[in-house]
Image 1: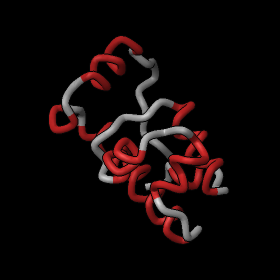
Image 2: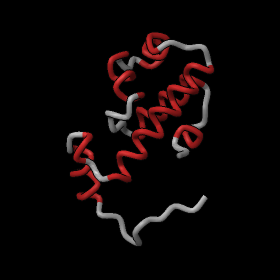
Image 3: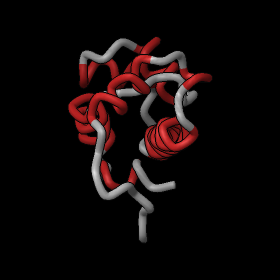
Image 4: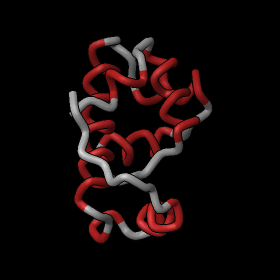
Length: 97
């Protein structure tokens, strides 16, 4: 899969976008958040795990998991990795569009 990306990454711009309310974030950021959230939910349900089960395994609050599954959170790489490990899926699978 080919991803269109600029030649250089402006980390300050990315950090600014992450701090914006979800509806004001750039479309690419919103798409990634929505893809991760929906893929995570689908994999969690397939693993027959509740949000509370994931909370117990990761220490990540259930309300955050719920918001993340709706694409309203911008999780860190560490958080995404912990969530992926909790449900036994590679992180790359959860980031697919």
